[in-house]
Length: 391
Image (cartoon, rainbow, N blue to C red; front, top):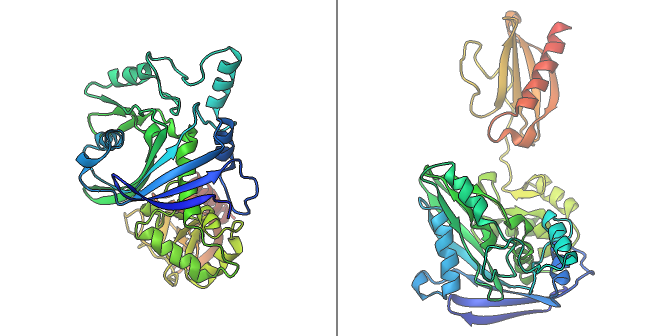
């Protein structure tokens, strides 16, 4: 392990864990956020420290002011939701912005340095602006708000106290819930009167948020030369139970909030593709890209046409992604695979011949068609079906 120290401590928010890592670190065997680690080193940090508080005290009136103001801003951004912090983190900051070298903002900073400007501030809005903040121009936000009457500018100003705050929160709202990872850079936007959020996103340039996730994973690291599919299953269950293992982001809508990159850090191993594929084969997990989810249930794809010829429904709500009728004779169905969300089977039936199967071929499915089929996919499927029918 390349982590320096992990120590238990106390905090006004509750029991805390303090994690420190020397910079730069070049000897990792696991997947690491190299851009962000280099950015912290470039900004002058010899080491980085994160303080993690799981389940902070419920009464935020007892919180330190800087933490409470950030929490207030998070709630102001989501006035119709109940927000509960699952893990609260503070990451030690440098005395200048820590921006990855290939980020567009980095070019601005380097040009400002050449021009002899103070790079602690990117946009001059008057007064002292915290050097650990990437900066969003308030005038731009005001202009956006003015275009929609009733909009509200919500802009959290970090305290510049040497710490950048990151929180992993649970959101509850009418009809569902979710989880989100945010830092102090994320609360910079315009709240629409109907509840929509227009953000000029500074968080993408914030190294501290990604490093918070990395430090979290390092603190839970469990190096093992005998990693097994069962170990992946155990990590997934912890993530789905709401424990923040260190993933940069995630949403249970996708069936998981655990990424294989995080598993790499937790197990102190290179990206464990082979291990993951074994776990999928053993039906311990499912794998969509590099996202771990619960194992898919064993299912058998139905035979024959699934949709009724006279149906007006878009799909059957289960197997059929898209379907159509051609020339008043042929029924075309794109049917999900039982084993993968990335492919499906395009089937063509002749309705005038007792629905005989004319053709079947494997086709790609963009993003698993979670929100319905991609228009580009539909065009490809139509063209493929027309080619078969014309032949």
